[in-house]
Image 1 (cartoon, rainbow over the protein chains, first blue to last red):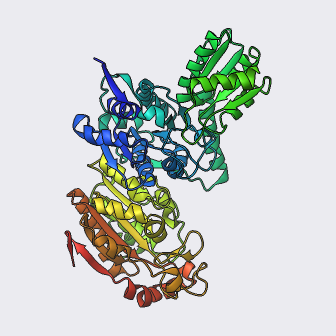
Image 2: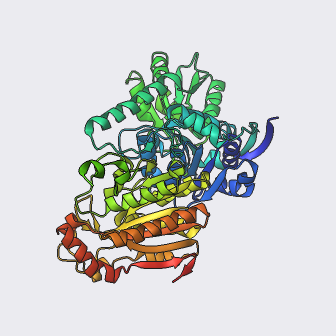
Image 3: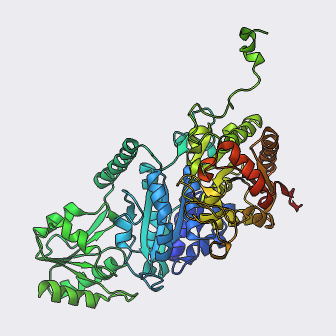
Length: 359
Length: 257
């Protein structure tokens, strides 16, 4: 049955991809996520399940390999870290435009530029505000534990195929590198080619046997057709907001002060909330699990209840803009976060809450 | 034989390639792309593999190849077709996977993808149409533009000192062990087209036999980009392109000629 193991976040994600019945992984080494491809190369999933693993010549090649396999309806993923994701963005835009299912993992490190190899959450804008060119969004899952690094792989594939859209798992160097116990799911079988054609044959390019040809493209030279495509994408995003929003509320029922944080910052902020409660401060935590869709309505409701909100992020202030928009400036919203790969402590978060919000 | 006899199907000598759609080609009259498309589709049809073939279209004049070829096709980002084809061939090892790319796509922006797919010896066919210019964007200099050749971004002619030499990608990839078959053809006369078709056929046969990568360059004309009539462009191609890009087999059955 399901197996309990002590694993790094990156390894747990790689193992989960095999167990989710993924058909292929294409990647290029970059710190702090190289364990993903190292684990897969060592594990030889080709022998276990028939899953293809290939080290590409660049992140650009890797994402376009993902595009190729996704064009044929295969379950495919890639992983990288910030500078590598910047290189993949053209391909990600193509995936969105051509309406292809794929999973992309970003184990974020500090930037801009070559930045640092230490953990960061500075790719929030890039992840939820487009990143690549054109009118598109990514469904973004933000794991806060090694367990979620594992669990979110299958969830991401489910969403990717539900909407025929690329899905991003936005992790960071902390979650990717740390070891925790993780409950691994049972092995799911990979689809046979016949099953795949049965499931995805209406759109995937698998050879046009017993049907009209399928074409995968993101190009529409006629403006009316291109606008229709954009409208079709926007409908998907609306549906995601209605059906697939995920968030977690911790001690929010009676909260007077709210922290909003995702991923590793949420883990640290949860401890800060506990410290605050010990001091008699009624603090709560809203953790967005999906960064798009974003828990806008939940934040707006809390805006009537709390006196102030602190957006805690490992960056110079990015998600705070979505918090402000969500609460429609009804309550004061401040940002706290370290950058450059420095990880804030629960004490620092509590201190920021007291100084910036409670005053 | 009167007209009624002549138009009987059994008396038909030439017909539209079965695997070409009824969509009118978007290529300029006189351009070699149409013939290159036809030959590719004739081979796929005659080998009986149309239901097992997956094409990868590039960015450039032939971006719309999927409108004309009646097979499953995915359209890749600029230069990335060999990476896209790699993944398809790896996850569907029994299929016939080919890319159809121009010189800007394959030999400039896609240099890395081309070299590495070739070096891995992916079991795919690459059809490389080299007309020495960026046709779709209106006649800019390509990596294969000849020395002294005028384009909109080399308006005084390509100068080797500042712009580099025309890139012989085909000779370059022929030196990689993973590449099984490399040939350079043209399609501007019936004779040349017949030879090119044989080369394309050999390339797809190699895929069937899982021999690895086959690379078929087709030196072609761009009468619009070169600012010539179709006939002038073909004569110019023979006189100027062929001496620099000589036709013929470069590597056959894994052995350099």
